[in-house]
Length: 213
Length: 117
Picture 1: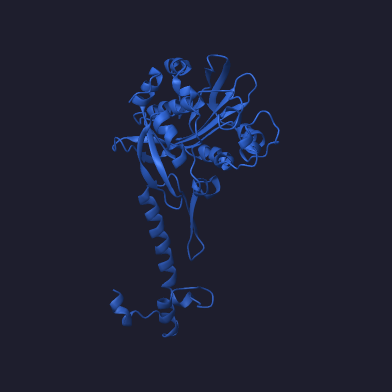
Picture 2: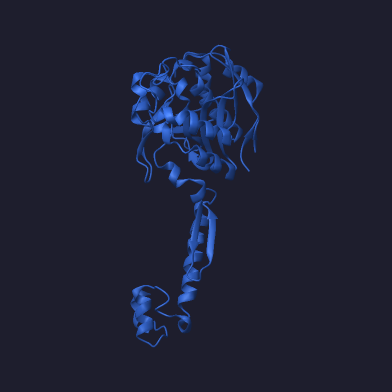
């Protein structure tokens, strides 16, 4: 048994694009493999007007994310899930996130509180400013992290979530999303990562539009 | 379990925020997947008698994994203290056990090993 949730309608880009937040399926994994991965691996034409010149030939970390395994793992556990955001009209996959509420993760800010851990987040290449000449859907990161807060609340975890960031992404989480910045954490057999955390208070600030601590 | 998203959450999510302009970097550690894949999600211990003990890795609290290890060790001990059934050619055992078997015609002799406790 695993977490289920009803699809949610999300008007993004000021209501111009109606999206759906729902549980990921095998078809989402297929879309990742066939539509996202070639671009994330840099396999685009040199003159392709949709992509910035820097995309060609560059392998990105998110190309190797194991979504099929994440989906299978979520099916085996009570408190794990993979969420997907897709375009309501076309079904095109826009973003994926896997959450772990199963294993015991604890807040670094409030050490007695359990949190959910954001294992993986990936955004479709056409929604990434780094890749697309015209970024299509905006706000996917905020929606996914807000959803993580909601899941953590419903699991009885006070709404906290944590994630491990690469050093190069730290500025975005700290200065952009204004998450609480922890320390570098060594993960057994998996390197050292910078920890960030958010919670309900972060969500309220983000809704206020100012993002001040 | 089922997550029920409130209407208030959806309305709030629909309101534009300056955070929407931020390009979300990918989240995901390097080797995490191999440690938690669906095929390696189970802890398997095969005892000397061939018994396979299986435990879900992600659902097992630390204590239960320890109990599983103790059970495996106990099974190994039970097997190795039956000297008449042991063949050193068939079973790979540690040097102490091999000494005990080889020096006493197959019978286990602990009398000279009191220093081991």
